[in-house]
Length: 241
Image (tube, rainbow, N blue to C red; front, side, top):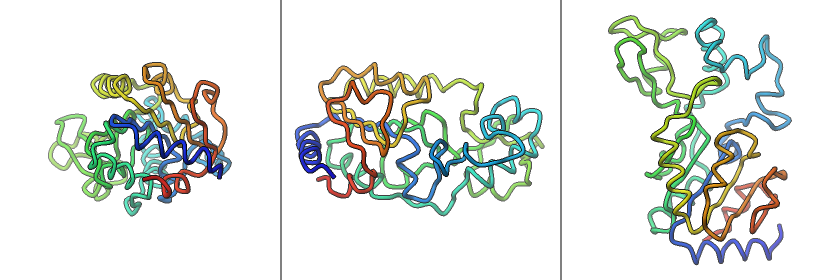
């Protein structure tokens, strides 16, 4: 690891009081949750239908059996636990350094680590709702429902509160995320290829003077960052104050 870059990042963190962390799938891979676009990710695996098709709104409506089989097998990790990245961010929030977490992940590990101000752009597997009566189910209750989950109260289909392809982001969540980014004095973007829009465009809302990108591989926005680190997130965050 480049020690000069690590020391500069430590300085940035120590001098900041409104850090915003913008994270992608790479944040959770060290908790045993696979990402989508890496060589071993979901999009590189072979299924009867492409994963991008399966997790679309149209496919969910037309082929619920296949959708829920894939969703349960490949997108739910009830035994996953927060890793050093999640725990460090929660520590910073307790210390008054971290202003907010903006995440593209749906696993809820930031909250499990103790973070409170978390903007989940793509929803959460821990919230599920009946499309007929609105009854809510947590992950444990959802997993106890039939393969194609139906509400025991009214018989309506229970849908995970996750954003599928063809669906729009929650406007309240996106507004909160953008406002947080605009108020940050340090924006750390980590574990994301910055290839998913509109989320990747949120970097353009940052008005501060220090933008840090941490990812194992280069991203399309490396050239605009003040500091770029191509290392595993766990190795970086385990050395931060």
